[in-house]
Length: 177
Image 1: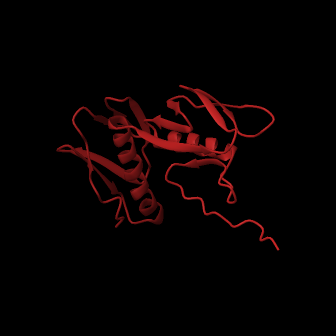
Image 2: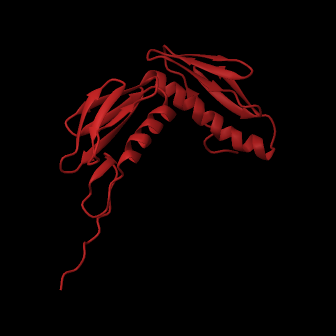
Image 3: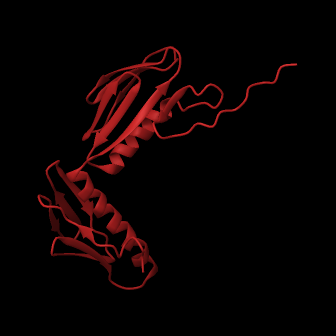
């Protein structure tokens, strides 16, 4: 039995879940998300909880059991609290400005880098910190990863874009004679 899949999902007040054959719609105070309904599992709602069970003990059903529960839990959490990731920019001459859907960054290249986030994700900038927020966990993580990939942190001086909780292991430079 899947350790993740067997846990029930608590449905907070103000959140409604509609289960169809091919999709599950989660509507809450922050917005609406659609989760695919995987073929080898069933989702049932009762007493303020959603429970995911698998149809049989085939390998694919076991794999989809935990996945379906995790996707549904992330959708419920997203429409109630939303998700966010913080990115820090470190480096002399590095700057960032903008907000909303578009930001402009100076990252030591010969030109400014313009980044436009996908629909449903907002970017807020304060000093040298970018906050990526939205209700879809996958979209928030994808946008944060794309921004970080523009200038990954380097190990010698620590310059670049990193997650706020990321630890960059520093290396010693060349040893002089």
